Amino acid sequence: MIRKSFYVESNTCVLCDDNVIETMDHLFFACPLSQNFWWRIGFEWDIELDVINMLINTAQTQVNNAGFKETIILGCWSIWNHRNKIIFDNEERHLDNIFYRFLEYFHLVRHRAKPSLREGMSAWLDTL
Image (tube, rainbow, N blue to C red; front, side, top):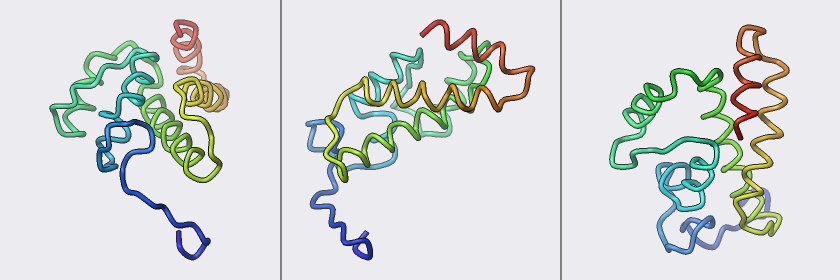
């Protein structure tokens, strides 16, 4: 980031007020704002597990979720983009910013998905 003239003052999570070091686990799964986002789209993570087992455990409970992998990737991408917008563009920290960014990305991916997944993805999206 120095090459682009950016200097990040702190290594604590910008998504919460917990003064916690920003790690991948915290940012994407344990941060209260991230947890609220995941709950809003129907996911509850067991953050006591390591990330791999947490994903495996959740995948077993989401067997009817067409596009499960896409949902996880887009959820993390939405959280990451919101984090960067807070740091570099002074975007307001808010759950809706993550949620609506996720919906935008999900709609784009759904249009490019295999026809066999599209209907299930649309049905899941309608539950939100």
